Image 1 (cartoon, rainbow, N blue to C red):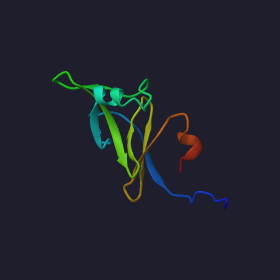
Image 2: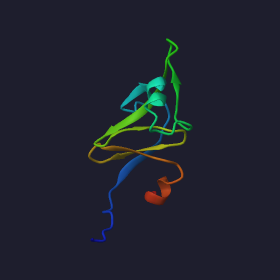
Image 3: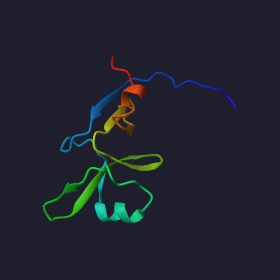
Image 4: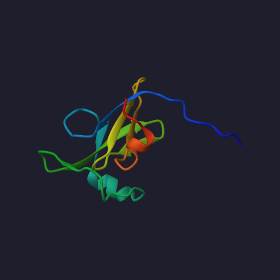
Length: 96
């Protein structure tokens, strides 16, 4: 086993607010709930004009990460997006 340290990378960090096109898409709330493998207590829910409820998410190489209340979106210089909770964001990223 080898010990490594994460290479410093600058990234844009913004707290998620709807309407800024930060998400990659939305999934129906009913589909998110029925998948059963995700904790849904803190997820952002958006009600559309037709009454459907959807949850915003970010797509990445491991699949999708749904965005929760207070989460931050990290956008790396290469355009890759990540989601990080407000409880961890400034333990992982320092303001410059």
